[in-house]
Amino acid sequence: MNELEQARLIINEVDKEMIELFKKRMKAAKMVAHYKMENNLPILDSKREEALKSRNIEILADGELEEYYLTFIEGMLKASKDYQKYLVESEK
Image (cartoon, rainbow, N blue to C red; front, top):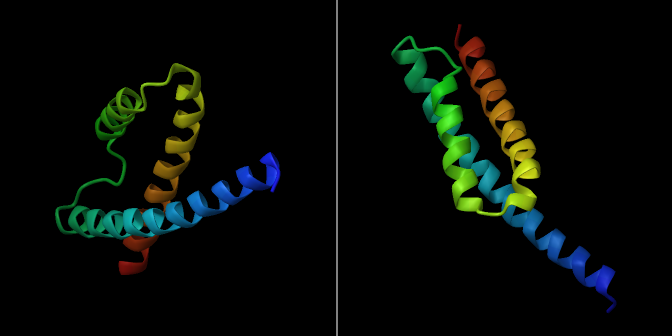
């Protein structure tokens, strides 16, 4: 197995793990959506998002990857908010 094949195997395995984590995160987002509906709160919580990004950048602790991680987490946050909006609208 060459280096490219080995890297692709690692990527495939990580993708499988990320899918499971994504599903787990979206289940939590559903719980958040229900709480926000019950308490008449908006979907967007900018302070929470900024705190989350800051905390996770500290955990990442890799300046070279920081820009790419922010792109990744912003996409994840958008997916979460979009899902919450869908849930709220489908409850109406």
